[in-house]
Length: 123
Image 1 (cartoon, rainbow, N blue to C red):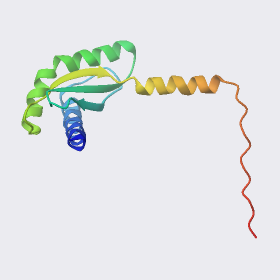
Image 2 (cartoon, one colour; image 1 turned 180 degrees about the horizontal axis):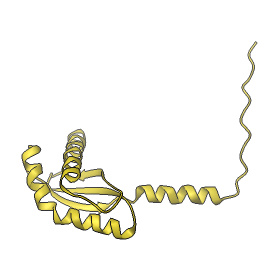
Image 3 (cartoon, helix red, strand yellow; image 1 turned 180 degrees about the vertical axis):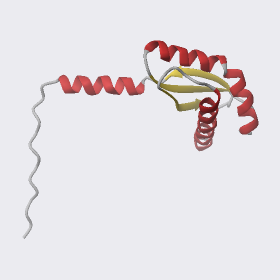
Image 4 (tube, rainbow, N blue to C red; image 1 turned 90 degrees about the vertical axis):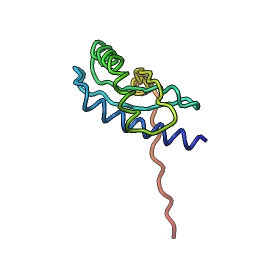
């Protein structure tokens, strides 16, 4: 069952990415569908969106996606044939920002770097 959900997630992600790219013009530099997580009953899909831009641009992108949600669901029903068309729930994907913050914190730590190991010479 898990493999089926993974395939449905990927299919919805691909189709929704195409719809978003074609239907909406954003003020943000880049808006992408990062991940789709559908519930096991196939009735709800949580769509995580990556947005490059300011906080206002992120909010505008999310608002535009919410405004187009019903149209996207209708188009998905035509393109993806499953028992139910899932209700879409959009959210910002903050994984990249969290990763950047962790890397910046690690850079700030004063950890001495180890010298690279010398390769052993074999006779």
